[in-house]
Figure 1 (cartoon, one colour):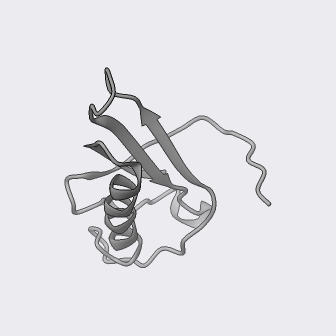
Figure 2 (figure 1 turned 90 degrees about the vertical axis):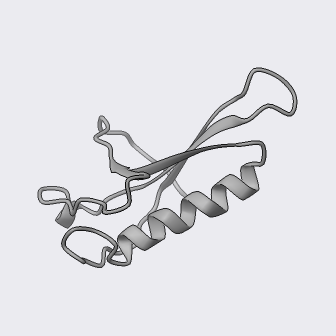
Length: 93
């Protein structure tokens, strides 16, 4: 997974900002200047802030396709990182 996170009061604003950071990574903004196909699923996690109107921490991650998992390009944006996760089963409609 390639992921980024942001503290914000708005899920929509945070999602847009995070999406574009990740999209730039898969569009070639990485150490190999490699374009990576966009895949499903996209993971979004929200760690709520302490009260109403407080900033929450939002995390968004794109799945890295199998052909790039052995030699994953390193992000050049310091706000984007590679995260290894245990295997999961995902169902999409």
